[in-house]
Length: 472
Ligand code: SF4
Image (cartoon, rainbow, N blue to C red; front, side, top):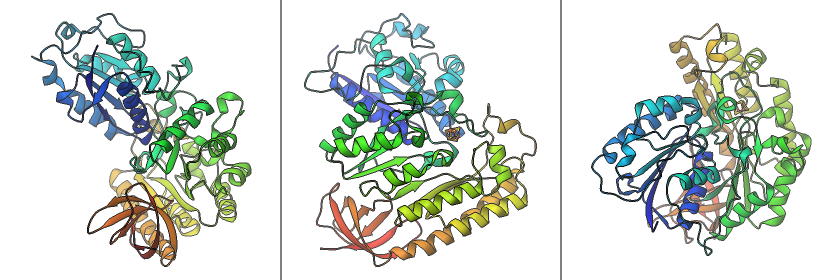
């Protein structure tokens, strides 16, 4: 097969985006040219996520919109008709006509593969993972995909059976945490989750934790640094328990130390973290390290121990608060963000008030806040005491109001501070830079190019950003 055009469409979390970046590099190394317009593609890969119903609905809708592309297109490439091992379904009569090869990958496949096959007979491949090596392996069996050119080095290792269950998003809302992939190289370090939070479907569809080898993580980080990235973000469902499948040898701190020692990436960030797995060692060796950015996203979910217990989070409010004290002692500049779910089944008005009190007490710099939404297949969806939707919305509105007010108060402390930042946009009339804790600073101008470091003085804190000026 000669050159071919491919389009990648991602729904869900930053880890899906990271997988797509790696997949795009692999396909490019095999002669592929990435296009944004699916109608111009020979290969369309749809990377799916089921953590949120919205992402799942969007994926179904997008796959449905591809039907016209499968009809009346001139031949583009031959496709094998035999079903590769990884395919849940390939018995597709339409394959006798050449047209774009359509692959749906990621965790929607194990959950809803049969429904996808039934509704969209023109989908050629259903791959139950978005892990790039596994997707390449599946694609290679379905189309004549060349080996990577020697000049274009592969950045990930051969497929491992252990990685068959893959793809992640941060449950409980942190998939909404925005990272700018133009500024931060996203490196997946772990897939799956060993916890069993009662509201979360991740462990069912993605299986237990599987750690990416340190050498691969280091290679990926170095790849991004060579591409000009000054920040790399290490992604996992719960990065704090990195190495759980390896007997914690290495563990999270050792993995981070390897990245720090074997790369020169100036800023290392990580997402996301289950408070249950926090430790003094992680605080001392990772969070306090000057090349680790001060952004700590530690989802607490609720300020009520009764609710945390029903959520099966495995920690108490008191334990969470103790960790925050220890983190702030070790890293006074920490920018603390969290997730909240309100209106969880059985949450009383008193429970909700405890969550509001936690906001007042801990004073988070930012939070991602959601009204509980039952997810089919989770334990919590079958719980008694489901809270009325209007009440869930009322609690969410009150939570957002309080959190915004607290965040505004504490973020004004940055006014007057001079911070390192990475330039994101450098327009003629306005520039934007990102602080080490991922908050944008709007500047009147900058002399630097996007991706470069600058220094900014914060002049004003607004709700979701800062205003500032470049310091010469
Ligand atoms: S820690 Fe809990 S919420 Fe996070 S992925 Fe695992 S089961 Fe889901």
